[in-house]
Length: 435
Image (cartoon, rainbow, N blue to C red; front, side, top):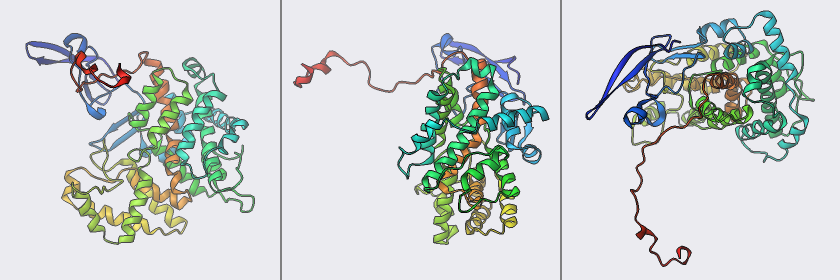
């Protein structure tokens, strides 16, 4: 990425004009630098939802929504899911390069060494209601890590980023498995030193004293792919939350907790669970065409979950991979899910409909991922937690990048539309509280 000012644009407002520098990224995308706009003109920009605002420079992830491109540190996502594992991608996001064999071994060792959370934290799980949502528990528990591991500030992260990254990725994985075990009333399963990252998680989730879990290599491979596809996605809602909170020099764990909270919303990380609920409703009704018509009716509150994306204007590249892997995995394990048939019928109908084509509404990453998690045995209320586990290295990478380049606390402006100046007459009242 280059931030060299190669051109200028002129903004004219009334009798005033100001030249704005144009900055250009590595792939040729251009942006107006308005950092001194208010200083020179007293004007601010208005962009609700920040859909047209670049909030930072970043070297981590590149997305081209018009061409369906997603790359981590310049490497296409399609190549990563073919060639490496999730821990390699975690290292790539944080360090900017894929690990050597020695670096991979050392990082893997750190993941193992940091997989146990502080034993005193186990007691916290007993205080949550048995039906509490896993995302709410995770957000709270990660925030509590700031008390148990307090020496995690910007300086320590720069000096020992591998330690901080490994601790976050490993402990939160253990927490998520503990949350599930608590919800079903089974004893917790501790991580094992002889298992890989994803195999360890599956074992902690599903192993039982009365029914040992058989770790299938195809399931481990699939979980690695799903985690890689969700590891980062540029300046989305939760990543922006991490950068905004982190700009106040908040402890890393409290910052990650903010990302978890943002991800828990149904319009962000919770969408894959909403897709399953929608598919089940359509399956019970049986009339796919009816729901397609409802989705096109602006007066109808029904929305086709898992379709459309804020950035992608064609098929989400992650959705293409997940669709292919979903069909292959279900055949391999001889698992039949009627919801997959419903999803295929919806996609076929939508992609032939001019409304969906004209509005760039194609399947996104959430449309098929829930079906895969169901086939793996992951309960629906854990879907968003799976998203969070995958996104952890991306959040850490953005935190690290932010503290290395940004010293100012994030502080947007607003356009005030409230009441104008009120006179002293507003205090003329017989209310005794105001006398």
